[in-house]
Length: 124
Ligand SMILES: [Zn+2]
Image (cartoon, rainbow, N blue to C red; front, side):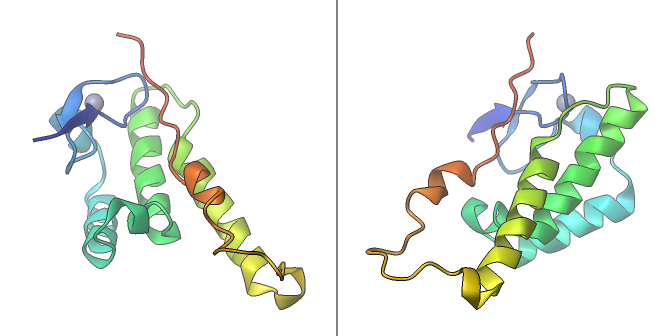
């Protein structure tokens, strides 16, 4: 099983890649937020789909913020930043007048490298 660092701020406990948070922090996430995450995770199955879904990103951002508030450590939240960025991008691509034309390729290959959140590594 792949391991990744827990997404709660300042945690960094190795966690199953399918979970996202260590059991200690996941228990701090309110049930309705957990349900939103499960619902979005069922709808978007690949990590690429999830990371471009505002629904998933906002639910996960809420989870990170709930934990941070309970620990009194409200700091940066990569998921909130990415959710806001994805929303702005959706608005831009929805407006035909702003679309660029005449590009070769799909025009997205450059962007794909910045669609992944840069999760800050917590010092241990
Ligand atoms: Zn944790």
